[in-house]
Length: 145
Image 1: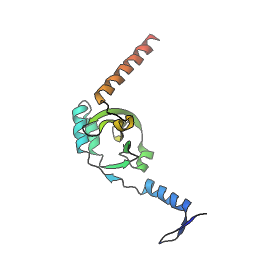
Image 2: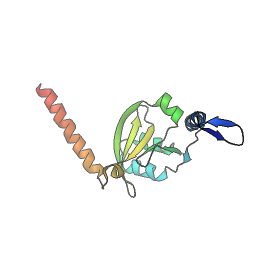
Image 3: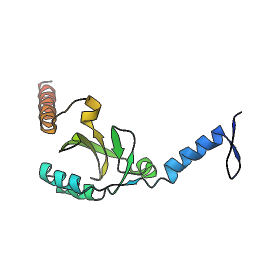
Image 4: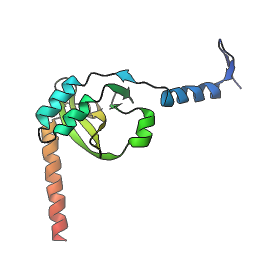
């Protein structure tokens, strides 16, 4: 068994890994985040959903999962409060298309950087239009059957 030495005591790799996991989950304050631009973008692009612009204003801490996704809820809060309602597209002038996860209580759970995921620029408006066409087709097929 590999043993590490630090200033406090000798720990095994398992104990160190467990402590790191525990701290990430329970002692993780996240990073400061300024939601001002996202609030303005949400107001402009989701004018029919002003409550979501207000929800973005509450996103003052972030917990990046990786280079493709950022959470706006702490690890503990996600476990308790993650009640997914749906996703919306938001066009950002620098980051490109964002897929914003909205909870059923209209809070913002996080966002995915879609252009990074796809590896090329996308269009929030084009994606929204494609989704609407898809849902219309699904509804039409349901009505036929």
